[in-house]
Length: 396
Image: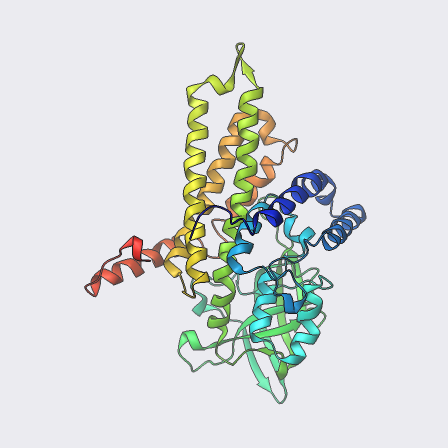
């Protein structure tokens, strides 16, 4: 593979980049308002994206999406990630859930949930994490579902169910096979959010940002047995199929955020002067540029390598675990340096950096904290040596 953007992808990537920098980023102040004006602005951006052929580019064509192959979409996702609102404006905020339903949903589920999902007529949400257990070990999850006649009865307590406050349904990971081995004990069940017993306790602010990360209680929630997604006991398999590519999408969007912070930092260094000399002339400031360049480029190559491994049909668990940690750290570091260059202004809402910084810190926690991925990668690599093998990088 080549790490350059393929010629076949460049035109659509450039179009998305222009859409982001010329329309989405200038509208961020309004979009952050979360009121009627924000909703109207988002709808207008979505309509423009549809008219210009930029809508749902990563969704399969048979679902009404752009049909970009996985690796091609990775390059597009990089520039789409410059803003938190890129996914919303371009119709890809449903991608992980759409791909999951596309693979596992029944015909009835496809008609009810998948088709409107790709059209952005409804929002999805996904419930796995629980406040009362260490969700870094998902075999401890307690939310249960029991068949009662033709219905699943669900009881439990979840949180960080992102988007539940506006979602039409939640995909809930439940313990359905209490006597099975831990990794065969869970199933995925689709729960409409208007089902009696489904109660949103609160939107849990994250570092001061209200982002729709909801705490939800399930109290004798009843849904039809047909709402089971995929086979019983295959919750872990389905979750992994969803989370693996999803982590690649996260990392590529983080690279877009890092590029934006890098641009802001370098422009500031050339525009700002101290004692009559531009900041760009200071060696310590050039160190900020050097460190940011090497970290961005390293994370980018790691991410593309992981994406290539997935595209070739591999599970790429070492590659995904490594890049999830490296990319989250990189993003935090690059934004931190940009804020340092801006000084007091970097701490205000006059630039996007302060909000980007808070979101970047959360990236080291969600989709598995750093410690879990570090342990998993180390264990897998050492396992190769324990059985007499080794880890030859060029052969992976």
